[in-house]
Image (cartoon, rainbow, N blue to C red; front, side, top):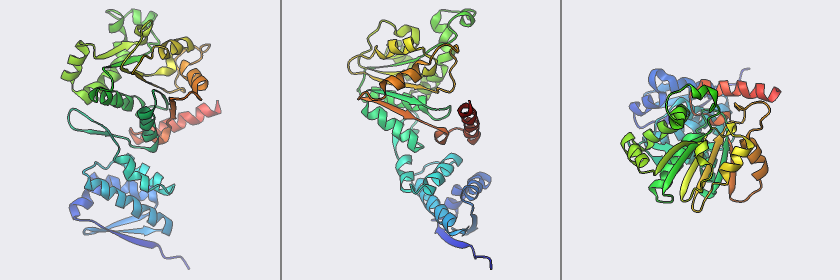
Length: 322
């Protein structure tokens, strides 16, 4: 005799709250059902969850956590649902609210920037307590964005007097030579993601004023040589494209009262095959040094489109085989 499915019921304050949770064209509902292997039926301002006992329990817990987010006026999206289900299946449902409530920075327009995964929260905590932090991980995990948010926060709190953002320009030779302007103009396309993040967090007017006063500096890595960077929050992005010598040069620029965050994806190195990545080398050498933190993000921490996570997973499998 086939076992009867387990059932559980969750009450909502109104039909509108239920509709908000379900999402446009029930997109959130479909993901909830797919990820938890249950059937969800709306009964006015109540839902019925049916399926195996374990799946029903997980779905009910996740839905209640999502209700808490709605109560705090948080936006529910597919990525939040999927990650919440993952945490619940691992027995970490209590961490769902903790992560979603960790506000790193509020942007110029009042948008809160929050950690969305355990990996991101670990990364932010590393930046809070360490002077130098390395973060490696695939595209879409928020490595650069969260580093920028922490830099802006440090400036607002007057923990530092300036922000310095840099990237290696791996094509600083022949190809860039055909572009018009000086070196700064030539490498601006490489630095554009950093500009975009700052525009969003500070607003273009504030960014322009601080740039003019030298409080924010977005520059190619070549500009770091020979300098001592004091009282600054320094972010090196795309660090997998630094050589061992460049990385050593950069790290030894650290001055009094400064913080450094180094981000990159060691699977996406654009250096010549005979050159070892300075990022990979530095993590190996500095692994046991106090006041230096290392965070490794994975496809689980991808917060872009769900397809990005699948793409990252596919490439990671191929990289491991090689």
